[in-house]
Length: 350
Ligand SMILES: Nc1nc2c(ncn2[C@@H]2O[C@H](COP(=O)(O)OP(=O)(O)OP(=O)(O)O)[C@@H](O)[C@H]2O)c(=O)[nH]1
Ligand SMILES: [Mg+2]
Image (cartoon, rainbow, N blue to C red; front, side):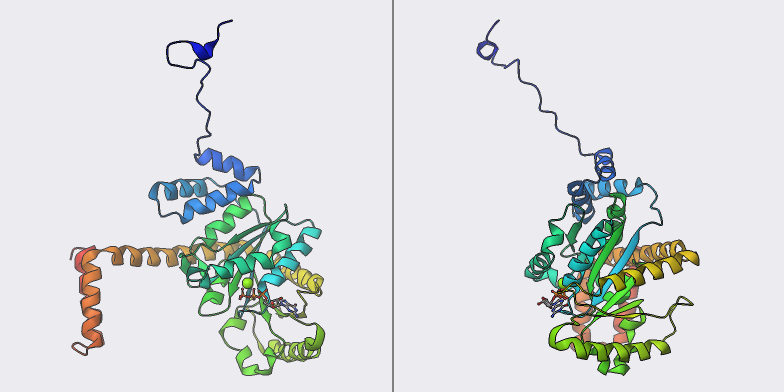
């Protein structure tokens, strides 16, 4: 036998090209089908990418996803900062696993753009869940925030479902418009409240609560338990006055302690009841389809805005016009008309 390492051609005949897997759409689709969480992450990253060819690849994966069944649940968890959303999701996620579910968590944190620390905070609060083989946790993409939900969250939900996760939980802070945005991508919405929040009954009627299907008074433990019970009765009275979108549904008001893992079974049965009601009335698929159209409309406007303001002529004139407005040189309606004319001439050439 000749010693191939020492031939004098300069080429090692034992050298063979290391077979690297070509990462095409088939590769990603197969990974998703196998329930591979790393490939799931890669797919979401493709869609978030600023690199055009990566985004196109991500979109071709999206196009070829198998149809999603009705047997998944998209659950929104909203509430003001510090109310215990992450802790609740950690406990509820583990509870879901004990019921043979596979939860995926998409945490949307508007502060993530400026403060990466809060993502780490969320991660540590979901310590047990993030290490669990049946769960998947993905913090929001920094820089891709539309309203309160990440611009790619809708796609991320579908990818999680294609990867075999049956319960997709979306965490959003209930500030600005995020609560109304999350309502457009979920089937069931839980609003987490602090003990004492019900003292301001007037506040109950405002925006946020109108999009909730289930109220949860969290931190119902220790010295706050009595206050939490009081808040629950205030809310129970108030929800009688609400007219929920889905006929036949009265929002339940539930006490939980995410820290002590109490009340989670009640949340689970309320979520299941609401979901069953949606299915019985044939509303689930209808709502999801409407959400798709709404998402399309929002995204198209968002993209149009992005494209317009990338244009140098528009960018320059926009800053001149807004300076003129600030210094009182022109009136607001004139400034708006100027911008409209600018859009027409630059984008539509008329
Ligand atoms: N006593 C008590 N404290 C809780 C409970 N749930 C959460 N906390 C505490 O409340 C604080 C905030 O909890 P998080 O889970 O981070 O709240 P969050 O709503 O996710 O906060 P942001 O993501 O920053 O908006 C932490 O110190 C938790 O330990 C609970 O059920 N009881
Ligand atoms: Mg959180």
